[in-house]
Amino acid sequence: MKCDADTAAWIQLSLVPQLGPAFFRDLLKAFGLPRDILRTSPSKLGRVVPQPVAVSIGNDTRRAEVDRALAWLEEPGRVLLTLADGAYPRQLLEIADPPALLYVQGDASLLARPSLAIVGSRNASPQGRANAEDFARALSCAGLTIVSGLALGIDAAAHRGALPGEGRTIAVLGTGADILYPRANAALANEIAARGAIVSEFPLGAPPLAVHFPRRNRVISALSRGCLVVEAALASGSLITARLAAEQGRDVFALPGSIHSPLSRGCHALIKQGAKLVESAADVLAELGFPGAASVPKLLSPDQGLIQYMGYEPCDTDSLVRRSGLTAEAVSAMLLQLELEGRVGSLPGGLYQRIG
Image (cartoon, rainbow, N blue to C red; front, top):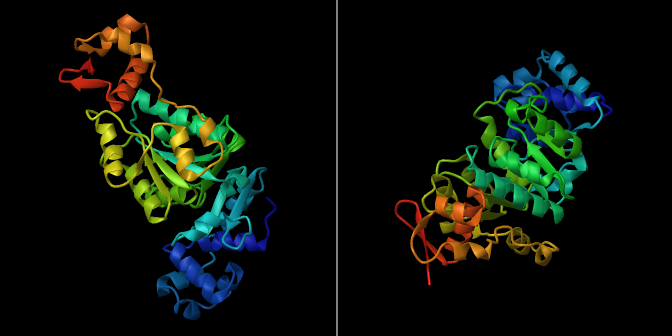
């Protein structure tokens, strides 16, 4: 990205302590572009923002940080999108507190494409990760860009599933765009930067502070036409993202799970509150009115032959694995689907029984 004085002014203003998105927009409305704001006296600025913030705006003590950001932006595939840019995502302008600027590494055009957020537990089950990856792959192949937060568990699985598809994926960070967090996902982040997009509203070098992630979550949901929660405990950041999505007028979807799993309780709570229960990517596409919904196969269709291995007496998962030759994960997924269809019932002690 070719940088100029206006770019530097946007960055410099964004680095002012305690100047959040709301005060930033108030200044833009009152005084014009950041270059004009930086030339305005603290006394006039103090009519719009708290006096300590007004004084800090006039302090030219952030030159090194600005230069660092400008140097970062000079590298290929890196851009800064501001509220004044025509390429700024229009869907972010629909929310009450859009970021004043976004650091983007990768394909910035993805931010304007139809997208779906997929979020869930960091401590996801193997089946939860598989479901997230399968849904993301099918939805990306159908043309939806998958948005998530690069966290461990469901987020990472969703990114991996989406990358090969036409829609590809966007990772919204709770750190600066130059900080890859968690480190375990560094290789995945590099792949997303090369084939998708990395996005952050935070200054370069910003660490993974707890207060950053709710702000990150509102961007994840705002960029998307809907939010799919795959696995989530009742006390989960994913439920915050789902709540924000609902408040922003986006659709909320939830994948049901076993009534015995703590990671299903958040999804079940969302369904009770009105989230749409989905069993396949086609369900999501149909709800969104997205083309190609009818051509997407069911992702959770069980092997109907599993029933024949159950007989009519209660049996456990290990027995079904031995009888069928399938993996434990495959058997568990099939049992869940059969249970949802009312063809199998779960009993105490981890047993299952054929119904009817």
